[in-house]
Image 1 (cartoon, one colour):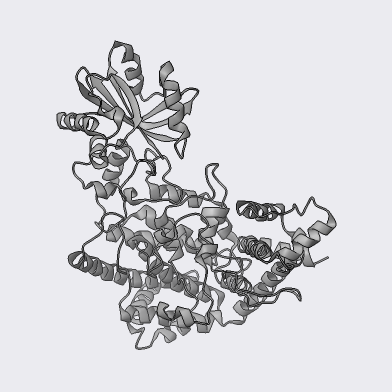
Image 2 (cartoon, rainbow, N blue to C red):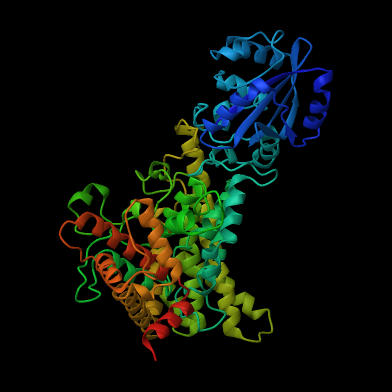
Amino acid sequence: MRVLIWKYEISPEWELLEQSLNQKKTVIYPTRENEKERIAYLFETTDSQHMLLLIAGVQTEKVAKAWSGYCLPEAYTFALHIDCIKQLSNSEISLLTQLYELSTVESARHNLETNPTYFFTADLPQKELFAIFFDTERYSLKKYFAVEYDWKSAPLLLPLNFFQAYHQQEDHLDSLAQKSQYAQRPIALDRPHPYRNEFQRDKERLIHSKGFRRMVDKAQIYNTTKGGHYRKRLTHSLEVSQIARAVARQLRLHEDLTEAIALGHDVGHTPFGHEGERQLDLIMSGGIKLAPQHQPENLGGFKHNYQALRLLNYIEEKYREYEGLNLTYQVLEGILKHTSLKKCKKEKRHCAVCLHQCFDINEFLIIGNIEKLHLEVDFCSTLEGQVVEIADEIAQRGHDLDDGLASGVITIDELMEELNTPILRDLHHNLHNILQPSIARKIVINRKDLQNSIMTPAILNFFIERLIKNARMAIEEYKSQCTISRELGVIGSKLIFFHENEQRMLDSLEQIIRNRIINSQEINCFDGNAAYIIRKLFKAYYCNPRQLPDNTLSRINKDLELLNIPHIEIRRSNKDAIATEILLYQGNYPYGMEAQGYIKHKIFMRNIADLIGGMTDEFARSQFKKLYLP
């Protein structure tokens, strides 16, 4: 991204131009003959056809006004699009004049009085230039700009009115909260929206994505056909979002970022819940032999939090300019780290000798910088991401018990008996006090339903209140002891957590859920059926790639083209060529084609995992019937 600095003298001949700029109309620069070659060169040498525009208008002997926006190439000229206007103060005028005169760029060194019109991509002192064009007097510049910008690689900067609007929205936030100006995206920043901050845009991109909509028919614990009152992935995500936002509000964190992470945290889940995930991971880690000719090997594994990165920033197609949704790294990191990054609980220092094959991040973050995900630590570097991780745990304990009670595998009396242990005594006492008077004061239509309905929010509130209290103390202690990095808003410690006693209570609830609900016949029959369908689907596509949908075949071809690997169109080639290509896809490559064959095999297998992982429960069943039933 290049930045175009343009200076001109306000005079009768430029009066109409100034009026258009003041009205924020699109203006075509009136190109002189001797400027055409220069303008063409400016756009030819920039990485993007979209340049940030900073205009300084000169009244007699001094700069009087400043405009900022962006410019796009036109025939032999460029079009100016103005976002904001600023009347410069005397001190800003003086500083801007000095910047021009002291610049190392030849054209900028001309005196403002003697050179009425010029434009150039400037090598001006950046902090001072930003201070002039953007209202930054009350704040440190590094609070706005996360990195030291250079003109060759700077992303699109945010205009004055953007900062003014979002200062008002975000001034109340805690000093450790994320801010819009910290937002970083894998493919630069989009043009700022006049009233939506960067994290709000991410939240809305997620809501309108296909992956988000598909969660409406993906199981949480129970079969999606069991009934509308049982949780699915979408309702679970909405409940996590509600809990996380409530906590974020109390801690004065960025609610839009918190919601975006919460709404997207399970978007990478497979059909049939965790059993579908386990089967795809077994296949992609080399744990299942699909067919006699299949040689199982580790291809990077599969886990829903990793798959979400691949889905959201690569597979989703919504924009012409780039692949995926181009979500901010803050959202991507929060989604990735809402659950464990590893398959086992061993410390990282044991990874070199561990027999478990953990997940390969390079298979999932196709576009972007891995360093921005801060994988050197297991916890999220934003407090908003840390909140979502705990909110996910709280929501699961509450609604898993609620669904178990509704299904009848455990009764309210049995649950209360299970809770009557030394570890869970406080929770048991709290629930007992809430349940009894509530039931006694009301004429009850269905005692069981009412008790269940009271139980879930009581459990949620019990843990939420303690989480907020613990987090407030941890945040204040962190701020008193640490020098906070304001450059990127990175938090160097895990501050959102339960104390040991509360964590033991959560773990005990999880054990009750596992013993009484997950171990039930109904759940195990559902999981067994799910495992069978997932394996059979993968086997069918592996053995005969021509059964894959056209979209999946096209994506395989696209992935190969990006690596400059020759391939054939399976739908349009002759029988012998197709047979040879399928052998490569299946991992059976002849001598001399090992490297190319391995890449084709890996891409082929990963795209099958993408296809099956993205299916809804009902669609997976329908594809199984289509492939195996007459």
